[in-house]
Length: 358
Picture 1 (cartoon, rainbow, N blue to C red):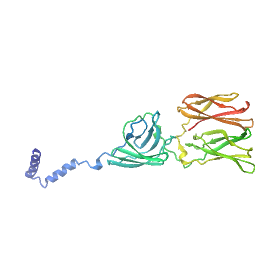
Picture 2 (picture 1 turned 60 degrees about the horizontal axis):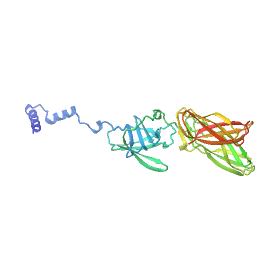
Picture 3 (picture 1 turned 135 degrees about the vertical axis):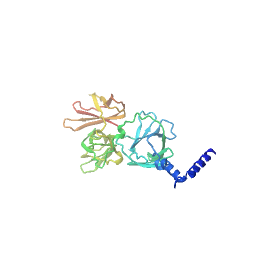
Picture 4 (picture 1 turned 45 degrees about the vertical axis):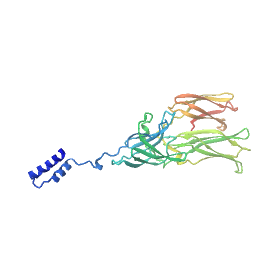
């Protein structure tokens, strides 16, 4: 009642005073102009920056995200792995209004070599009612992942992962075979080596491959096979040698042909490439084995490393080629290896190579 009486009193006051042409509606309009109501346009725009976690995932394996001023990063957190796996680094377009629904197209800017990283050029993100969703394809199966705001440990995510932009691959240069050679061992086993070179400055190639084809003097095929390697970084040589297949006569020729590099096997890297080559040290040739140590000077642990040994004569012709795989090559340490020696001459020129094996 007091409120109604006060309002009536105010109306009466304006009526009694007779304020010229002013009316109650004029006064209310002036009050609204002095203190206009908050409109939808004047509300703060929707803010999606911050940390996100996969909805309904209480286990250690889940997807998480971090949205910054202009960037979104999405990662897999795997149970038993200390470091998150990068899935997506892309652009984030800030909403311009306070609507509770928002979508944007994120352009891929990831410049690393993450094995779980998406190869898509762009990805659609949708927000509604406190939930962020997007599609994920794993092993041919596509599903929708939903994230909600939540805390997770970002200390293992380097700042540089957001800073380096994706480089263009329009000028991708094909891999090259710098050198190759072959021999026939024990009258039937074709042994060979190839030296692959990546001439690109900022693009690594995962799963590079080549085809080996042996022919007789009439050009008839004696045998052929494809060989796939692990990864070759920008400016890196990958020297590989091994036994190929058996032949029933000494080939007249052996050709090495590079296989096509698929778009999804091209991985952008920063400049210069962060890859730290492995070294072979403390080598020796025993009567029945080649021995030495893999020196890993990087801060990365490798689950598996391939070691190749090539033996050549004084003319640079291949005598033998052998390989072995070594597991658990730890960062900043030396790891011993041995490779069976099948009677290589002690005077042979022996070379060792080691590479990360995916």
